Image 1 (tube, rainbow, N blue to C red):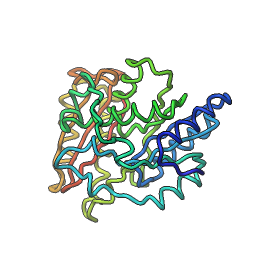
Image 2: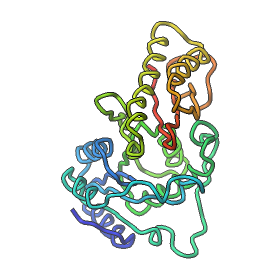
Image 3: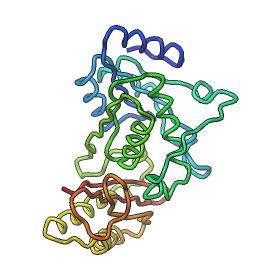
Image 4: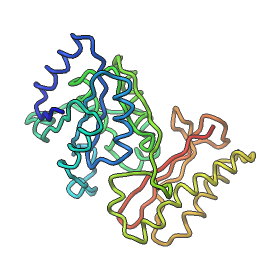
Length: 280
């Protein structure tokens, strides 16, 4: 596996690969890799001749009071895991390489960011779209891989790729979970022992709502209230949002049919966790 920090060098290698007719898969990450990230690599290795993984904690997607400085990092472990998983190039740029002096232009995402995490984290998706567009332009992959845990992110990025006519297939891969069904996240390391014990109830609440839906409940408010009741049993849990939305437009639903996503964000102390479930 090659480790590259230069945009120019990475772009040249990827250009050479394309001239050779090789299919390229891109796995964008912020590092601190876990099995969820590696499942994306597994899919990319299967689908492509070459796989590029970016490892870059992107400062522009963090708000002023968020955890950019504290975000977990372990580049040595990341590189070992990426190499073992079959990554051909680990792209590890500096902040100055990605946002050099004089950088001015950002992607301003549209209405899809008016809901869910976009509403709770103003400016977040501006940073996400900007860095991902840069990565897509540098690597020019045929395929790019993202996890369903960040479902809104995937929907927003897929729309960006469509709007800018990029010839890239966007893949949304299933959420990978711990044995107790907590969605894998780099931020899980922040949880105290008590919070870690309570956190799997997020998925339990989603599953109960899904079962209510399967039994005929279609009123979104009823389903959301039940999720709120389950999570509310834990005094350290503070709900950011619980929403049932159209899976394509992310607009809130009143009456739930197929094509809906149940999404939530919950604070456990200073740690914000997200999870979701696609109905049908």
